[in-house]
Length: 324
Image 1 (tube, rainbow, N blue to C red):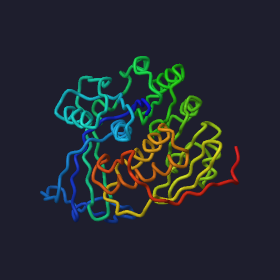
Image 2: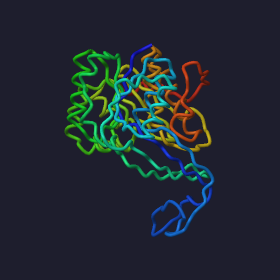
Image 3: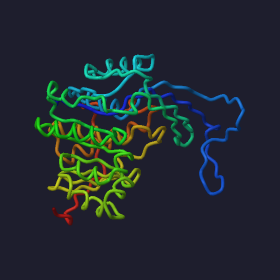
Image 4: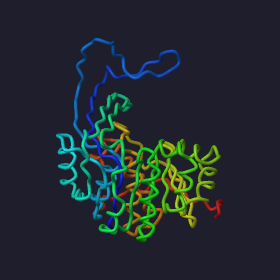
């Protein structure tokens, strides 16, 4: 088993779930979520309190797999923060390196259409909105095998400090940037030389390098990182480690209840299996299975798989035409 540090947000997720009132409608050619009239009082079918945020989602994935999982994040000393800590303690995530700045714990309200699984998310970032207080020197104490870094809300200075510290320690880096990081494209490109595994979805990849189809995007991104994974929702994913290239379908067709956390489940699921010594192909298949399981449950954590799950065969094609 490996020692893995997750770096990213920690939020309380409040789900408001309904089968009718959150259904989408078309207005002036745009899809508008919900049929609610200002001033109305609306009864909903279900409410659920969950723990979210990319940092906690990844940390729980690693812990359930059996790795030593540590979280670097910001949580306030309030009721929401206590709920997050209780969840992480129950999942055997090491919370000893979490920071507690003044303010409020971040919170998302998720309006979820129970019929189609579509949702709109309203987020107050709270203390998760900034990460400049996190101390990269904590890695000297932890000395992890890997760090898994999600979006730090465009704090490129902090990302550089984390990556350089990891590089100095011989710690490998997996990075799943967000929109804020991608908007800082020259700085993002500069960071990639310290990244061992880069995870993006197709839309994000197309903002970084030229290309329309997955193979083009993968080829261009592989010039920056030794291992690149690009997901494409229901169309599956593509990945290379410069020795093999795989094109994957979805693990299985499932009824999607909630897509929240699917990207985290794929990325952290891949690293959980790969850091365990599984082959590149096996790790990709576990990632796909983990993502497929997560979307069948409400919340980003209920469906996270363990190491002992039995996986069935899935579409996974070795592409021999692409060479590096």
